[in-house]
Image 1 (cartoon, rainbow over the protein chains, first blue to last red):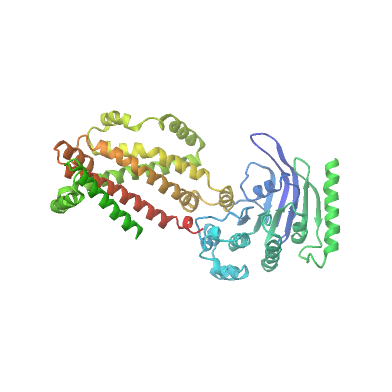
Image 2: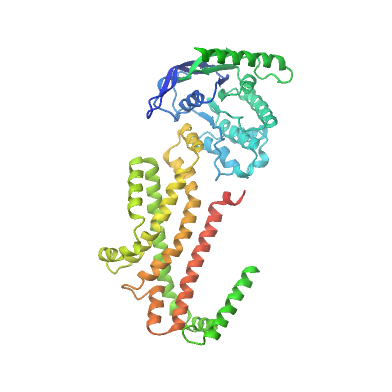
Length: 245
Length: 242
């Protein structure tokens, strides 16, 4: 479980506030989605959780302990996947698990089969399509069995069909391994499909507008088209209203 | 096939020019090759070994210092700033003009030649390494930060491999200028080396021996260049798999 309390952050050079008093929880195995417009501070929250930004104010607890990248296993999937160009797919997959010293060969075989990347192991990232790169990035983050998985705009660069397939794949893997996940996106549709908890971020500096328990998570976009449309209108209205104040 | 054809054409052109010039200043290629055959390895081998060792030591020193400064600059911004300022100040200075100072410091020892090769190749290699480190994608650095990776992991898995293409490119560029410096410095305080061999033969009006020296120093440059090319392919295979 992850608990965030009074999280605030301002840039050191410009002293401008980016985050103001952010508070939310994610339960064990829950998928939370940070929703909001570009530049509102969504990725900053992710960077704080990933240990990239260290000079924040507030408290972040992972299973009751102060979050620490050396101690905790935090899987990060950066926006551009962060695949290492000079490593083959297999080395890319293993790099996080090797650093964290918890490589499990059985799990590796299971994971590459689930992600359908067995055929790609000896290729370089530059030889892969966008969807294949995303699957490798997901595999790398999961292979070290993280306590927390962070995904920064993970589906932004994919075409519609690939995006839907990867999201379906992600949800099936998530249902199996139940890893607490925080996804950053500006797409309401992605948020509604993936997130059990939607955390709406608005205003500047970034503040939480609303936290919503999402009933549509994992439900087919085709079967629940009307519900999705209704929810998107509600979310848009909430965002619009926040701008008036 | 194309290479062999080009090589044969070069030989024919050389022989033709030698025939047209008809002067000992430009001997026939077959005379030069006969000279190499007759003298054997004892005749010029020692000069090749000396020159090769000086080149390799100078370039190795360049690589070592450049990598260390690149890494230190990555971890400490003050060192980075200092190196940048030194680069701006000293890079434009013609390095050959510093030879008298280097001679005063190291005398007529081997270190003068090695240091001059280092001096001429250092800035191109160091600047390329520094820029390669700057170009490491932020996503990759963030990923390693989120993993709590040690500096050793980061250096081994990210920084060194990211520098390798720049290292090979800049070393290949440096080989040409380093050979020119080597030729020049081998005319001071030594009786060994291809630079010495060429100038000594020239002064003795032994033009064939002079051409042998020129061919050997050129061959050495080509061999080092090809070797670096092969090492680049071996250590940076991802560059050739697009």
